[in-house]
Every structure is written in structure tokens, then in C-alpha cells.
Length: 122
Image (cartoon, rainbow, N blue to C red; front, side, top):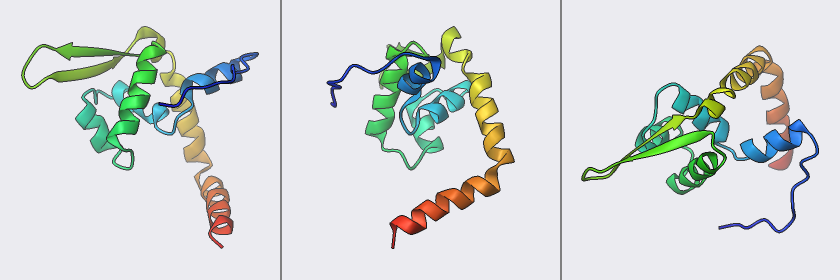
């Protein structure tokens, strides 16, 4: 696994949140866990573009950052469920606000994303 060699700059709240939420699927994982999709297989179905390995890495990071809790049931086959911690629940209004902003600016966002994509593929 990648090991960071440079200590991150944590001088403001944006730096801190960037360190915690950096990862393509972390915001979506938090959102889906909040909606009640707690099993790894359920999360994989909700985010089919993500590999199981990457989802497991990001779930582990969210657990280490105390945003989610992992419960392992002593059954065969093993059963694992994730839930938001109280700390993780404080992020849901922020994620919701970001989603609303994305919905309100959907047309412009699609335009700039596709512009970048098209210029890179030429």
C-alpha cells in the first residue's frame, strides 16, 4: 500500500477535510452508509465502477478516521456491517449541501467536465 513520505499541510479546515475525504469514493460511501447500505456487497452494488479492493481500502481509511464503525458478526460465512459514527454523521449535512450545489449547477458542471475530457482525448 502507498505510504506517504511528506507530512501534509494541515494549516486550515479545508486542508483537514481534504486529507480526510480525499479518495474518489469516500463521499459516496459515507452517503450510502447513511442511507442504510451497510454491507460491503451492498456498497459494491451501489458503486459498480469501483473495484472491491479500492472500496475496502477507502472503507478502512474511513474507519481509521473514525467516520465509520465496522461490526464483524461471528457467523459462517462472516458478516460485516458498517455504520456512521456520531462524528461521521456530522458530515452528512455537508455532503447533502454539496450534492444540492451539484444538482443546481449540473448543466455547467457537465459542460466543464466534458470540455476537459474532450481536450484530453484529442
